[in-house]
Length: 188
Length: 159
Image (cartoon, rainbow over all chains, first blue to last red; front, side):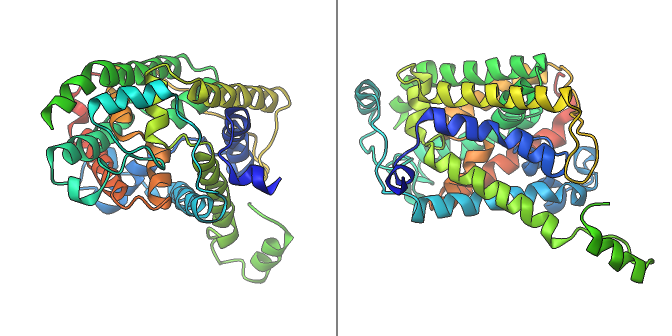
C-alpha cells in the first residue's frame, strides 16, 4: 500500500480525488472551488491602487489564501515524504518531439534547462516563466476562472460559459504547442 | 453561527464579543488545500512534461484526470442539489451561476497559451513552488502582475 502511495498516481485515482474537492469545499463552508481568485485577493490585499476591481473586502475571502497556503504545504509534503522520486514514463514520442526542439532534460516535473534562475534573465526564461506566468494570471482573470473554477467547478455545475472557457483553454494550449513552440524555440 | 456549543457558551459569557474567524475554521481549509496539493503532485498534473503530452495528444493521463474529476464533481453537485444538502455550518449549499462574457474566449485563449508555456494553471503554480522549484515563485509574481494588469485595464477590454 505504502509503495503505491510513493509511486505516481494513475488518473483514475487522482481525477476523482480532485473532483471531490468540489463537495468538500461546499460542505466545509459553502465555498466554490476555484484557485485563480486567490491571485485577485492577493492583488487586492497588496496593491489595490484604488482600482475598482480590487476594491472589495478581500478579508472575507481569506479562506482561499489559507487554502493555497495548504496547497504549497501539501506539495512540499508530497515531494519530500510521499514520493519515491520516480516519474511516470512519458510517451517516447513526446520526448522525441521535445528533444527536436532543444529540451534535453526529462527528470522531475519541469525541464531544468528552462526553469532555473540563471535562465530567468535570458530570452528563454523570460518567455517561459515571465510571459507564461503573465498570460496565466491575465487570462484566468479575464476568463473569470481557471481549470479549477471553470473546468472542474463550472462544468460540475453544468455551466455552459465554463464549457466555452474550457474549450478556449485547450485551444490556447494547442496553439502554443503546435504553432508557438516551433517559432519560439528558433529564438534561442 | 459556525461551530459548536463551546462557542455559544463563550458568547453567553461575553455577549458583546464579535464572533471572529476562529483558527479551527481556517485550519480546515489549510488541510483541504494540503490534500489538494498532495494530489496535484502525486498525479503529476503540475508536470510541464505532462502538459506537453496533453497538448500533443500523446497521452490520455491529463484527459483522464480532468474527465474523471468533472464526472465526480458533477455527481456530487447533483446529489447536493437533489437532497438539498447543508454545509457543516448549517446553511443550505448554493452555487452561484456563471454568466457568459467574451472574456471567457479571449481570457481563455490567453490562459491556454500561458498554460502550455509554464506547464501550470493557478493551482499547480502554488504546487510547483511547494515542490521546491524556486524559480516558479517568479511565475507566480508574473501571474499576479497579469491579474493586476487585467484589473487596471478591465474597462477597456471587450467583455
